[in-house]
Length: 137
Image 1: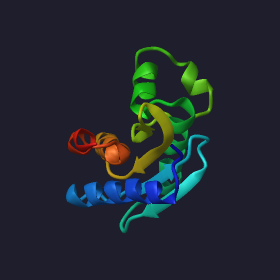
Image 2 (image 1 turned 90 degrees about the horizontal axis):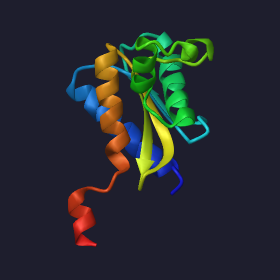
Image 3 (image 1 turned 60 degrees about the horizontal axis):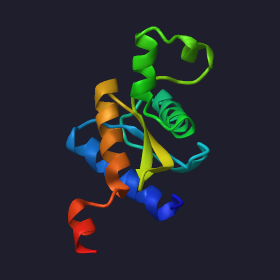
Image 4 (image 1 turned 180 degrees about the vertical axis):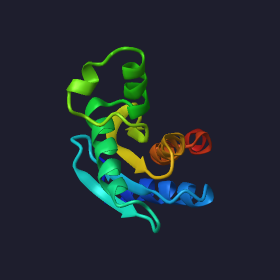
């Protein structure tokens, strides 16, 4: 599966709705597997720097095919080589997987790293088939 504009907008919408429910204005970026931007939204009341952070978090998650939280945890546990690689390692980036394959990633930058990561997790799951849909096939 390729992440097209319809899929990117689905992920963006899921992130925006989750951010609104949490009252957590965010910058939201959706990228393809190479890290190229497909969709972006900066909600009202978001710091200007959050736009770049969201895009970089998404790119990092897409290119490394793992969450930026995992990378941050690796650094905190002593794997400091990531720091010298010149890639952002802040929580809030999550690969988007469909049938196990990485089709893109989402990056969130807003109020706190914990909230960013939770919104990214929810948004990244937006394209996963629900158990009910899978059973009906």
